[in-house]
Length: 88
Image (cartoon, rainbow, N blue to C red):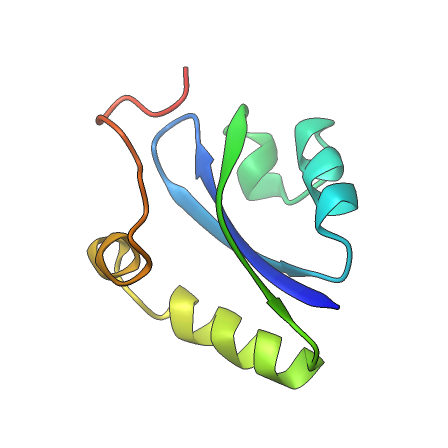
């Protein structure tokens, strides 16, 4: 399976990613081994994910979501992001 996911970072920004093993990838992020972007904004919380059987469909969906503004992500995916302070 292939996954796309969105993390809410400590500075209240959203990070969208792609992986084949979501639990392993989340562990990488939590342990500072994930992307540089998330590493500098820990802690981060998983707030959204989708599963796909096809890698190409997952990657197309990731690209679509990454092309959206923050407001569109929140609206279209019904994300719960809380206040303006993030996850401190």
